[in-house]
Image (tube, rainbow, N blue to C red; front, side):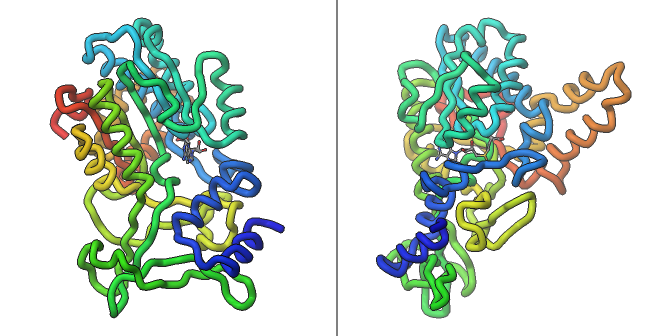
Length: 351
Ligand SMILES: C[S@@+](CC[C@H](N)C(=O)[O-])C[C@H]1O[C@@H](n2cnc3c(N)ncnc32)[C@H](O)[C@@H]1O
């Protein structure tokens, strides 16, 4: 029995699943979940991310962290944390770039927060002895300032969906039809009074997990100092829209088509993440990915990589374009910074 059959049976026995429960099963079910069993990252896999497109991405995050550490007064110990490190490329590029600041590397106690056993194995191959692993941020010891990066992690945290119907809000749930196919169904919701006003047909997404992560990082930044950079595709302003999508071999599938066999994501809800961090006393700011990378000097880094090497110039030019062009990742992707109110990290001074 595969995941589809098991979910169909479960739904028949105990009722429809929220979209958040369905996402959790598809991504993390220990036997069939996508990240638990078969994550396929990269050109030959299901999807590609910024660190896989270009070394410049991780390098500039390394420069950002080393500069933040310096601005913080060079504390003797700092937790350098990555949430959802994928194939380890970002951390490898970050640590290589940070060699330019040896004091920072010496101070850095490097932690990877990863739930996927196959990806942990890949990260271990790439990063070796330099790093330690935790399954949640709460397991990374506190008591020292933290510099944290999470690229494309918020988008795989579970989200509920609500649809505005002619008679009020209803929750979108995953049910099953007479042929045992998974289908979306709507159920009137008692939470309706808490949801915003919207025209009929609007879809509202609410991720308790994204909010909880914003609150956890914000509280920790206030308590221990440091800063966090959350980069993802998503909205900078509150809004509506159905953003649930499944990707397999770089092609979009219906979210119910291949449970456990495709990556399943939603847009990051940055306004909710920032509000949750602010409620803990932290400050929060947001830039587009293009703005953040430009402020960190991506143009100069690209020039340095091609200097004296005209053969690599077209490739580096293509990489730069994918990272920053408005019709590529530059505008859809945002860089959100959570930090204590009395410490503003580089690039976010006026954001
Ligand atoms: C889309 S991949 C991004 C990988 C990498 N950051 C990159 O940019 O290439 C999502 C990563 O988050 C991990 N992940 C998913 N859910 C997680 C969770 N709840 N806690 C920690 N890591 C998680 C996945 O295993 C994977 O490493």
